[in-house]
Image (tube, rainbow over all chains, first blue to last red; front, side, top):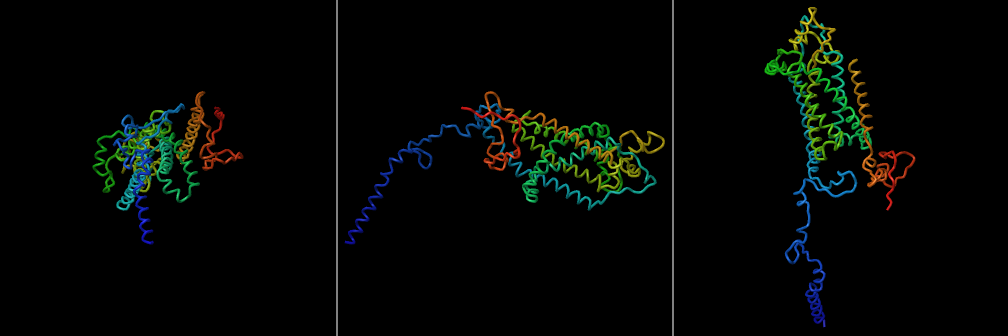
Length: 346
Length: 79
């Protein structure tokens, strides 16, 4: 009896297994797509349908159809945005950190190696000569103050959420970032105005000439103790001037393109402007760090030029001997303490 | 020091002038892109909510919602 039951059970299971494919066949026939995406005829039913690859052969982005007047809203897929995002989120912070921290490290190493550049005492020590008049100092400081705030608020765009937000929390960071954005957008205008004023005031003394090459070959007085001849501005100062003029113009143009979105450029163009703006901005900050160093800690007596406007005559003779001769030649009485003529900068 | 103080005052002054000049030129999107044939929803009742806190159900009329536009509201769509 037990053997008969076992035989019967085996027969039922075998019958079920054989009949199952036939039972599901009608359902399978309803959906001809098999696992590999092919139907039984060997054709791919979606082969002729429009896909991303096909659309990108016709244009660099995929747009839809809209009825509102803002045509930009029709933009659906723009692959360049992913490249921009990748740069913005992955490469830019590292480039920024490397350049700025690299410059700070280099200046620190230079200070440890060279120390503070001093001026040898002479019989002219203690007498003053006007280096920058009030208008020149006003122009310099207006641009400089704006630049510092623009730099900090600009760096906040890159590093704020990574470095500041974990420290002060999202609420405080949100408020700070909002005010930083306001200052960035509005102080850009006095900065641009200041760059234009500095360019006009100092261009005549910053035309490169043969003296600059000799100054560079002599190491600019940084190497060794002898200072090469220089007129109102030496080659290093001329470099700072042209860097500010060039970078300032580039930052202004790219910034204006972002301040007035879609006025001249589409979304791609503005992304390119943002990439240029950020890269030049970082290089600008690194360059100005060197300028600040040599104008304050790096060289004794240099800050007075932009501080009070008057520098020690011995300092001026050591660093800008040709300019001192020109100034003294203007009158027979010596240093131009009340001079109306603008004097050089650091 | 005088030049420095003057420079700061001038920078702030020019910044304020720039602020007024720029903001006076701006219109809200729902105003700029609304025409007789197209209506753009008034912000403040969008998915992030009136207070931009992710809660669209917030109905705090005691204070103005952050980011909510002022001006003439758009008319609801009638279909």
